[in-house]
Image (cartoon, rainbow, N blue to C red; front, side, top):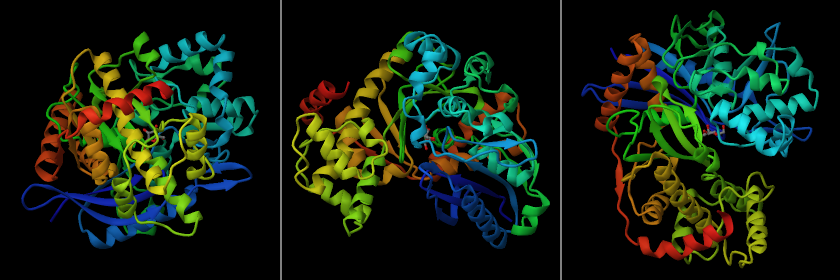
Length: 506
Ligand code: LFR
């Protein structure tokens, strides 16, 4: 009988329950159990997560899994970073569960820095305490926004739970804050993995709601009786994986070795966001890292992901919504075909342009940005699709150069994992723009990393053994999932567009 592990993998636009097990050939195999949408809600001008709908879907996925598999050994949740749920002393949700794109965070980085002594001093204090890049979506900035708006939720909160922790609590009844997702909050010291309480106190963020962080691989205990009754899962342990989706995805990169000082490969975890970086043995909290606005997120077994958040496939995905508004929803395949057929480099965008972060209509926003930078509006929608992909490849090229500067060593290979690997046009553009070999796959890296960490956790290993187990699980990924290699074909064609990109956006 197969030992089955259930990965509940929640992304910012969809979720899934996936079963993972070793097949008869000893290869890791995944089976889709349940897929569902994750649609945020606009409530009185505030963008919020529909966490009750997500919980209903999770229970449904577990119920389906319990009906399909006999020997379910464990279950664990991973999610996007930065967002959180506040729980009061009665074990109730203390306030709205906001989406990181909620407008209340606009301008709050500046206010937080001001409160810490001014723009430069504030940035220095935050960076030296946390090693994180500045993004207004970070939990620190979101919480500070609650502080300055004098929201009651922050006064009555007893527990700060990130999204994965919240669902682990519903599943097991145990409060925990998992380390990799906590590292996205901009409140954790990446050297000690303890909360930066001085920083929290200086910004009047109550520190009592933060408990010590839990390492990935920790067994929380069996599912609660109410969950067992609703799903049919009896006595199944909840195991904390790397609850940050990027941490799980990077665990599943099919590279050799683990957390080196000077790796010769970097990763792009490609989905709604593109997270591009290197897996290192220790954080790099240096002036250069701060200047280049790179982040030191925590990975499995104490590793560091030195990376940059890049606006990802968001622009491309939102263009599809723009077309729906205009009466026709194209398939992803036809969008890629239209992009491939469009003339290259007609307009150059920045995937991280603030105008593109949360516009009502992406196509109109692109037209506005084109105008602002003295470029023509896209002649056809295919031009806009193409620009949304080309600008990612251009941003990757810039980021690659910065990474090589930071680790002081050349990077030979780019591993792309996640949903974006299905966009082969983008993979080829990346190889060309960066002039590097691209290895694309596996597509379900996040779920694979989640399952792998549950398997490792069940063995209850020491830290050193865990590192070895991670190398072994990478070998398992290499032997179990096919990848596709892209070699640069026309790298020189990207030089002039890259100059334009730098001129406007770097
Ligand atoms: C990717 C991701 C990023 C995080 C962003 C927002 O899915 O988790 O790492 O910065 O979502 O949470």
